[in-house]
Length: 192
Image (cartoon, rainbow, N blue to C red; front, side):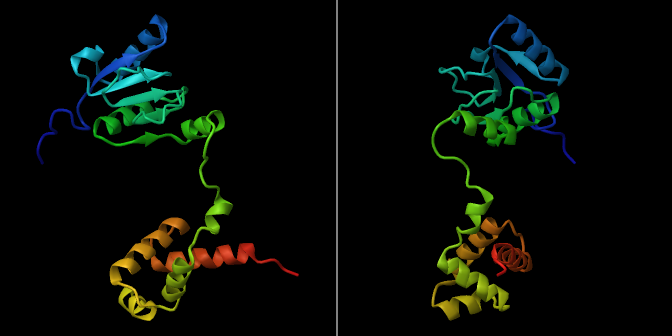
């Protein structure tokens, strides 16, 4: 096996800090150094920036925001996030990924007007009529090719709808999708 490349997940990162005050800057510096990262100024081409609440407007580098609500930031974590999560978020953002902590998302949704995440009950009603036909055909044991012939659509379209059904039902296999759909139907059935 080869050695990790510079800037890889195994190495240290060059991290700039944007903090609210000298005390918070010192605490974040100490934290980052304990994680093995090099703390640099933002003009020294950092791999990633760790911002304590408002993201600096002039910041162009990938940024992880602690306790903020900036939807533009690549990383968004609650203010009370632990060292391991901060380290993981910094490494992920430095590699080009987007990080959203569930705690940060809940915080943002309660503080920011606009659209919120689709709730579980609403997700159940989101299967389109075509996706319902696809799901029924899957339950009948048909292959994607047989589904395409039955419905008169392309194989590519069938694959697209199958993936959408899996995503909406939270399933990873055909059997699991059928089982989850059956569970939801039972849950939504009213006994008279």
